[in-house]
Amino acid sequence: MAQRAFNLPNMLTYARIVAVPLVVLCFFLEGTLKSSDFARWSALVIFIAASVTDYLDGYLARAWKQTSNIGRMLDPIADKLLVATCLLLLAADTDHRGGIAGWSLWAAIIILCREILVSGLREYLAALKVSVPVTQLAKWKTAIQMVAIAFLLAGPAGDKVFPLTTQVGLVLLWIAALVTLYTGYDYFRAGLKHIMDE
Image (cartoon, rainbow, N blue to C red; front, side, top):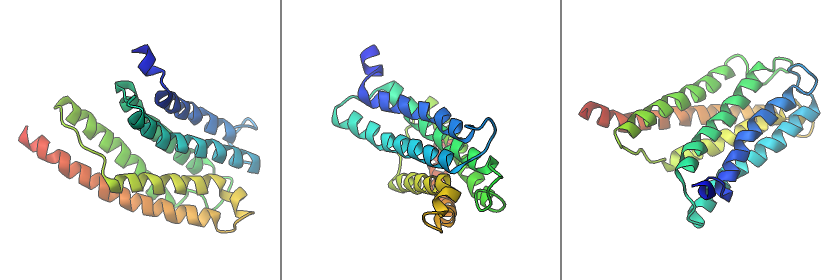
């Protein structure tokens, strides 16, 4: 049991969870919520590294036949912690214009609400011993979401290198939100069949 808990795929998942407070720390380097260029680039590097582990842990677990219950449990939790934390930080950072503010907040709210609803649905269905597989579109949604957050983390610092960095991030965030609505409905429809049967 201990050997499975500390295999490489699970260690990568743990690293992704540890990355969450590190990203937060980048935004609080000066003691208050302030995103200097250095803080933005640092947060981006940590976020990209964490996103890469999201692909690697699942791939290695399957390739090396090291799948485990703790890995299956923590992997989606780590993803949701990372995404939710970054979205909240970007929404809270009001020093810079053009980030997640105004109408863009709705895209973040849609994404967060869907994650909570699907998690609740999965937990309920797990009690019924029903598994809802992850669709290919849901995987694309996650990829778009991660790229959007990466652009938004770079934000004003990235705009100095590529002037449309923030705008590209916001467009991708809305695309992710729309795909999120569809995949969330898809999961709910699949789960509803089992709920009605009960």
